[in-house]
Image (cartoon, rainbow, N blue to C red; front, side, top):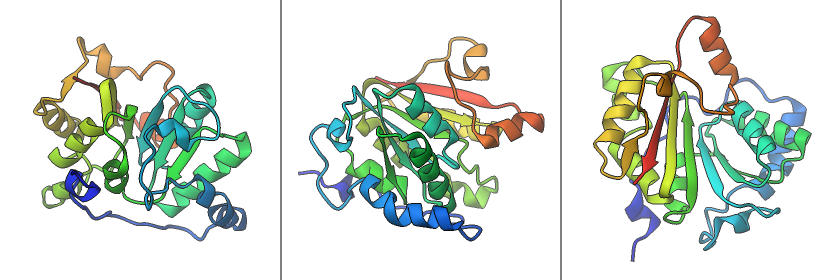
Length: 232
């Protein structure tokens, strides 16, 4: 029998967990809205992830490290028939996402405040249609590369939870991190890179909702790279 501890090695969450003092409304949302939306990692996962949601959904997608929640909320609003799970270890980012959930009445969202590796280990095999990883911390210093989220173990964990034909998508404005992601995904037999021409990774995905960070990136002249890997 495979347990969650066997699936994904435990890893530390690096970087800050909390920034500025929360606004009273954000603090209240963390106390009142997060508990009913939190993915119940302490209980066995449902056989069908659609059962996590209060509304009927046709499939489930995951966003790892959603920052301020602009992309996740935009996706959830545009596709109310899809269930979205968002994972973010940064308290202030979670508070902003909860504010968007409350503002737009998003019933197709569940959230996890913590390490994505724990969530990936909990999810059933083949249960996701897509995993998004947008602008992960590049940890540019060589001695910190082991802190990067994309590692052989996490690529393997994403392969386990994605259904055949599902996609893992990564956006970054750091060329070295794009090369790192390509190297790790392409050496996994579970994934195939979908790009056939340069425009396939230079242009945003169809219907892509830009994050605040991405808008700043383009304003400062950095060029994002959009990578898509299909689960074999």
